[in-house]
Image 1 (cartoon, rainbow, N blue to C red):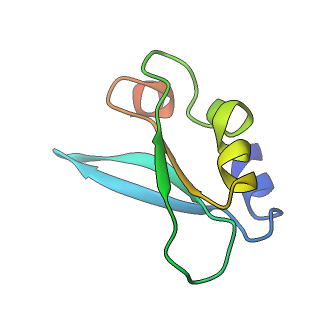
Image 2: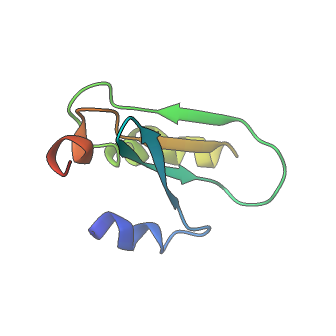
Length: 85
């Protein structure tokens, strides 16, 4: 809940997305520096039991500073996909 509230304070806001996966959906966030021009998008995943939102501090902010989009998600058996579903 805290991350969702914080995501709305960024400018532009981070967009919550759900990725269809079998009978469930995986949570993700699309971070964009804004504007409508095409730009590189980097996909970020912890690859272990870390939280997907930790990746904002590790990589997401750097992507935005470079004018890139960043897509952060929790894969099957990771983070909120594991403990909420």
